[in-house]
Length: 346
Image 1 (cartoon, rainbow, N blue to C red):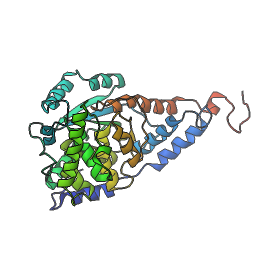
Image 2 (cartoon, rainbow, N blue to C red):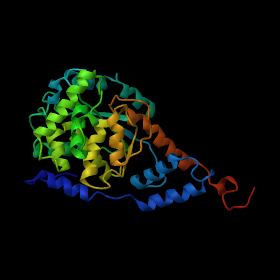
Image 3 (tube, rainbow, N blue to C red):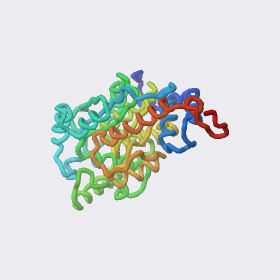
């Protein structure tokens, strides 16, 4: 899977997104039929029943299973950090990437619990993207190449992909992307992020307003929004979501920044996120608003706002539980239990 070297790189991406494969309806039908025969009242396992059917449809197999979950973290730096929009300096991005590699971060522990593999991708941390308030974050060619990098990053496969990120100031960038995609005021999309105080929150809103003003008239297309006010990790995560669809790997989306990457695809092509579930809703107020816009109901609501793929890693256990329960339960016939409309055969 690759993008051609065309004069208009975004055209390749648009064509690819328009041709994304749909669900495996045969596998989905098998899941639905088995679900109706399992030893429980219909619907009694709630969303677990939906998840097992979703998993079968997008893995293209029945029964569905989660044996090789993967967490992919994309890390980047942003010129807008110089505006004081984060409680931490930009150098922390590199330091945290090193912490991931050393096994010392929260995501490392959560991957141990869920049995997930972890990969970290450094997207030129020593070269931040320009300040989106006064320049384009990426050229079209660079943005397309970064999307392609994200596609290749998940080429190793697995059967469930969790997408996360790391990048000081990237909640400001995500807010700008959402503001451009969905409208509203800057204040609708900014939040405390890393824990900024009220003055820092005001600087974030001011940065988003400045970015909207600088790029005014150029923000009607989702990919143009991505390249102008996004960041490398957001572009790469969009690519990873696309590649997972092509490879029939269901996706768990983490928090607000990941949601911004997903929202670009949602606005680009209806149904582009059908193979994705929202793992959780973060403490960033705008994340809930964003999930509503892209039509995703979160699996968890734990007040988290860490990033790193942490919420997605936690949700692996829920998805695995749905698959194991669906595959392992006895049917009414197997268990000799009277089912709906069946006489007692014991």
